Image 1: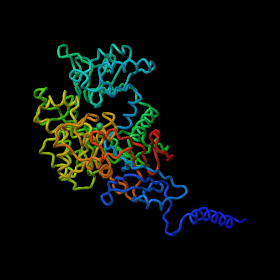
Image 2 (image 1 turned 90 degrees about the vertical axis):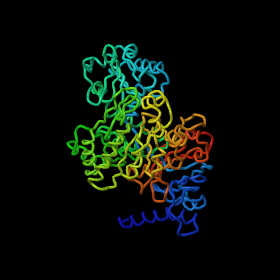
Image 3 (image 1 turned 120 degrees about the horizontal axis):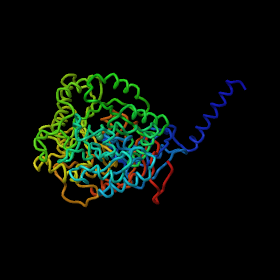
Image 4 (image 1 turned 180 degrees about the vertical axis):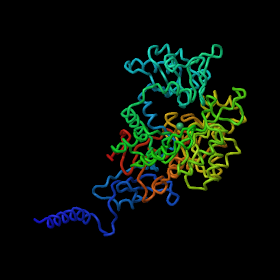
Length: 579
Ligand SMILES: [Zn+2]
């Protein structure tokens, strides 16, 4: 056979292979292409105003090809289609977490993990157990301890000395803004009672002796952290694998990485090259507040280099201030428990404005960490300066955390087109608020803690994020708190600052459509719409018809990324097709 006739025979086989089953099973010629996946018999809440509710979704490859009733979906069914009968379960667009530290959070899971330890004794026990289980590690590193567990949020070096006398220890707090160290670590770092507080940091000290007591705030933690051997690329990739697995378990297929350097970007890229990422990632490049525009060539280089696969690094992250619970957030009026102390922003307004104008001009989306009312005000001022200088480039700058907003600044988000990136899980009175924050602000100012409802009512765009590993990665926990202003799992009752409640569609939008908008991906994802990427989550119950206090109990059954299941819950007796 000649090459040509061989090719002809091959084409004929191909045509027959496709046409025969097609002809056998279909009556009409205009039958659409066979879907790879059909979810049917579901409550599909599309988040698309054009068709908010449906019964079925069909996808071919990574794209949604059909949204509608179950009967219509049958037309997409072919011999190779996987059809999942969902028995009234809920399908939503997969979630986006718009502020998360997925690599470092995952690395932390493999270290001395103190997250959710409920008492100082439990913290001590975990440190003791970890040190015993890892006799070869030169440093004991980890974190996740809750600040309210210790007097003045200030755990002591002596406790760590008792637990680990022979090796240096450095354990970051759950909010990531404090580190607890032992005497060995202080000695290696050369920190004594004569060491001055570094710029942007505080060494906690004994009131009497002036000796460092074991807790380092903000930049002071860097004095010890710089001595810790850096994680290897393999350790970072293992950490990210753990982070990705957890994200998929909670229905997340898109993230905004809150603060990335090149090592983190390389970690995301490495997993993506192997097809293991399973997430759309927008990384926010860490900006050094002291280096100004001198670091721009480097930032631009990273942005170009890491525009690959499912990764982009088009955003720049600025830390405007610290945190309220340890008195490092920048306030307009002093902390009541620190006479005369208003906290300090990391950048003075003039430098902040100049940096924002320059980043905006260079085409970076600006992602700001701001928590205190002054930190938030100077952030809005800087974004306003950028808009005044450069006009509106549709870069969609955003401010994350927004814990304490002066009411005068609430309308400015809408006015300036600044996306309000809330961590709604923090919007109930936990021990951080009752024991540390509210007493330091007093009742009148505390009214303006986590004012999500007020910002939403102005028409500003809300995004949602976990700040994991600071707090739970599960969006359903945060979604419940947004609509109850009570802790997840607390029985129904009086909401905390009821004016700041939002409704369920508003907060779901923050994790879906608005997240996609924030990532400049609203044309390709964020809602269940024909032509968009098939990023979907299936929940075991419809959270729109549940009592609000039960939302956190809903479980993710499947997480689908680009038409392919990346997570399936363990079987619980229902039909469980293999996706
Ligand atoms: Zn963060």
